[in-house]
Image (tube, rainbow, N blue to C red; front, side, top):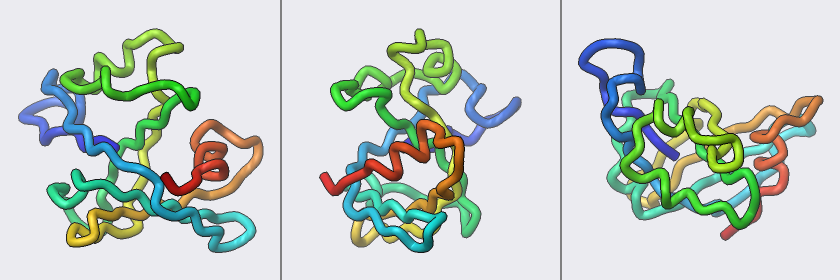
Length: 130
């Protein structure tokens, strides 16, 4: 998960400053309804995450394949991430946090299950703890 820095001018994430990454793992995957899944993410980095309010938007970066590491993204700007070749660029989607508990180092995101199934929906369906 990444939160773009606050820009001084221009659209969010296009200021040329490196994105701040918050490494996390899946703690829980809960099917809420036949068409909605809640994925709970956990990571020590979320203790330091500061939200902007109840409608906090985040970019969720998901590996394109299980062996893809996102470590190479540290230090890149959002624009540089978008310009990576398809095989190296993670799937990037914008979501609104459902909740954030800094004391537990957790954040929750709700995913609508729709068809056709896109890469983020498939990731949410397949997400398992760990």
